[in-house]
Image (cartoon, rainbow, N blue to C red; front, side, top):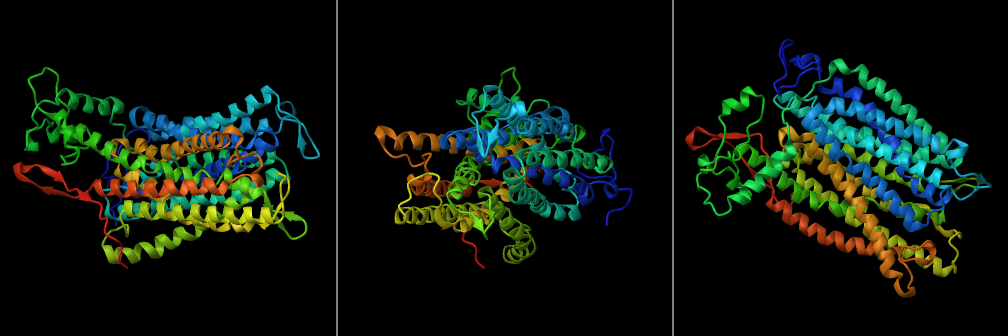
Length: 582
């Protein structure tokens, strides 16, 4: 146990910038105030995203392609804007204040959205379940509300999870062990919010009113923010240490290009670097030379130019970001697969028999709850059984490496989409058997046929989504961990945009010359199975690219060793791509 008068060892401070005692701050005590916000924020997001495609088609009269594209574009914006929020936090005002300002914008967007579906002049009028065409004002107000939420999410999403991780001191053995489980249980609270959204809010929206369905998470967000600020005295804060991260990252490749014809010394000790005392006195992390991406080392060559070369630390930070970028690129297709959950999976479900008993009809979007239920059941099993078992086999504190975790998740996703394609083939066979032609006709096939594809995606996300969040936080340079987390969020965002692009292009190509679109307004006369099959093919190709990128990746390591010249060099460990033996 740590003594009561010992300060944190990682340089964290209180809100006024003063050193803080380890025993009275941080750890799970501080995180307990954050978990409520994450649950309610995820409830709000999934309460919108899960059923948005239905609102757009039934209330705003958008066609299938337009509604899928607009859902993907909005979801993409929610996941892309964190790049700006993370940059502001890491470079200027820190995670706490960025989150504070952004959370208020988020709540404002939720209030506006609730008004957009509640106030008579702001929503289309409906009679007997049939809505009139929305006016330009109503459509504009609705989308302004949605994108206000996206702007708010830009500052909250990358900072709340990293702020939670900051509550554990990486230099404390006890707290470092607790941090290993942090992202698993952080996502667990996120899944709880998503579960209530897909089970409760979706039903409320379709049966009790959209205003109530959006109003509940709005009130929940406000309450969770109050709870968050009650815990202020327990929080640890990372000091903002970098003035211009973008400038540093851009400077390295530019300088390396200028020195492209200059011979790079074989001994890395001849490269330009500041004294270690400089980093210690300024509270910054010195990053030691690694043998990867050697062409960037030319940025640190000492020349006769008046312009100072980049330091080895700056070069290594750029190398780290470049390595993460390669991994990030191969996460885009898996994110595209996940985009089906809130779009085509939902539209697919609306065509099936959704009755339970004689009176109750399950909302199509509620089947998304099985993604969350699969996660909720799998996370404790992963954390309490799989990790300890594999830890004994591999000696890795995480059980398996981060990239092995991602690879397993990606493989499960491919199986899920293959199953979705097979179920769609079955649905089309039933359609032909019963001579169904109208888009309003219910296919006599139970909606729970879709359950396996939802459940498999949930199990895959325990490896994939949580693994990605932990990977990009853990492997990012110390001063860029909010920005590093945006590799995770932006990958999901671009995956949504990519899905929007794919459905638009597939529709145009397949309907060209009077042909039948694979993704038409009438899903009973479309070929979703072909589209899912197409996704399986590109996913298998992407899996090969992932294995290649993973085999080349070099992990950031906390271990150090002495090398010649008295310098300390980080030990680098390449991914073990050998098969797991159990």
